[in-house]
Length: 227
Image (spheres, rainbow, N blue to C red):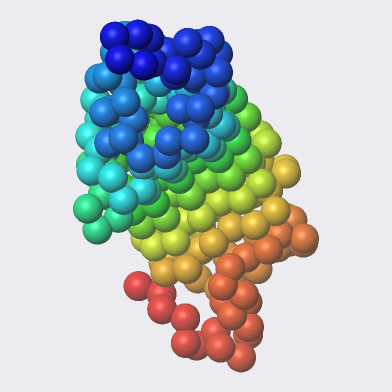
């Protein structure tokens, strides 16, 4: 109505926040937040209701990522994987994320391809991620130090993707499998681990699913790249 209150402005804040939950584009959320104070508050409250957040494909940095995650109090799944445009998260960003209230309740974290992070940031992040069940840390330069921290802090871990983590050794894998007693599967494609080490992991936990399964094919053992 001209000169009157817009229909959407008559909606209670709870409903406004519920509507904004369905906006998944961060650019659209930023534009929505700039409309008025009520909408800004609605966007803020909608973030607190989200259980999943994915920054994959978005050009995010430490500051912008941590600021959004701090509002996501109910978050369960966090994906900050790097894509072609990609998140540019560093150890400082992981440290900032580790202070968010939602971290202790996260069940899934993906740091896929985040080449700007090291053990320092990962250790800080997982130290508070005690509810973590699924972790994708493939394509990074982590070492056994990160796996030791994960094994200590994440007793509920069920799956781990370590694709291409060539600085991880059999020692790190053994500690992970020994301490994470709920671990069901690990992806070890492209790692510099000898076949005997994978067989040793199965001796610890026979039901463990190791991907790719061809690694456990004795006939193909000579084809395994061990550098």
